[in-house]
Length: 557
Image (cartoon, rainbow, N blue to C red; front, side):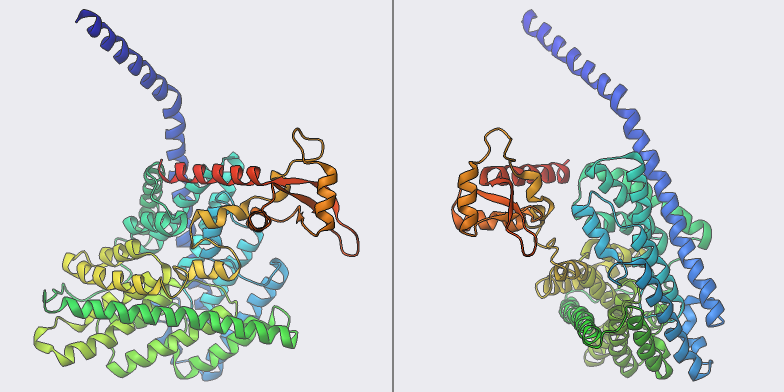
């Protein structure tokens, strides 16, 4: 008995000693990281607020009003030719910037931040990112029909990339810093700290690891404080009074609304991609320079805005009118269709900006249209039709972003009413469930899929693309290298893999050939391939398994 007690005391002392060493050696670094997260949150919050102020300043310069939330009302008072010309001039400026500062004439967006988190150790491009920020600033100030949240996310990602490179951190820490910056930017944009933190985890990092949660929350809170210091503790939209759902009888209507919104979100996303394909094909066929594409899009957008100024800008004024029920059925339906057209023109024209604000507007208009119809058929069993606008806003946005949790919380933070939150949650769940099966999970992941970046299927799909064959192969002088004569024999049969290829290409070749290894070569046009080494099947699988294990460890830490 005494011996057992001594063993327990010794074991307790050993654990205490290890715990004390952990606190003494690890706590300062952890506290230091939280401090960095706080500073990064403050910087990202100021970046979000500054970007908004810059839009207001330039908009006041070109349109004559700094009020982003009342742009279309002011545009009605302008001469028609000015409404037409402003987006054209903005498009030309955007095109010139993209032509000289990006290799492909494409503005960077949230999709690039997601790609950076997944396969670039939490880093994003800086030069192209700065060009994209300038383009989005000009686009949103000159009537472009997109949103400011996407550019703000990318600006925050550039800040986190600079910090990550300055500190020379690894991929895990780089992704955590990226999540902190994005959370702060979203929180500062919406005055929504909970949704901002969850957006970073759900959309950008695409996991909910506990080690990342605390610093991301710290940064998100910092971004919210910055917003409230500048704009006060106010919501983005002024909503009508608390609305209750007629339970059991009315909830099926929100299920149906969710399905309708899922279809609308898919139509919106596919319309953007279709317009992008058409404009790309025309640009290639006509040989147009990069700067012409945004200018032509601006011309089409300006022409549409002459008759329907509701479609220019971020659209918060029309969204607020939908949420307060100040639009009749006909206008709500027509404005939703026209907004989808305007967003498609703007984004396919490579003018810059984000998709979230347009999705909110289209969702609110869709919900209001549905609400007018539903409450007209069953007025005695229905709550106010503005509740349908609120639920529709969340449902379309969640389906487009592929973010049901954070989008629901954004809407819930706008209202603070649980029954309203429940109606939104029902609609959001149905819309995302439907839309995610008709596209590659979300608008952003579908964008990446169209660029052959396969993130939608998870790490097992995209990790192979991270490994170059030349980094995994065995060179001729390495131990256990492949027999050179055997390599030359396989090369004569056309069985080899380029050194610049990735395991995404090489592993299927090894599987199909049923060989132990494949020669790795450098092949120049008009010249025979030059042997560099050999890629063994076991080495490729080992690298892949180690990457999967590291990803699983990060996501569950």
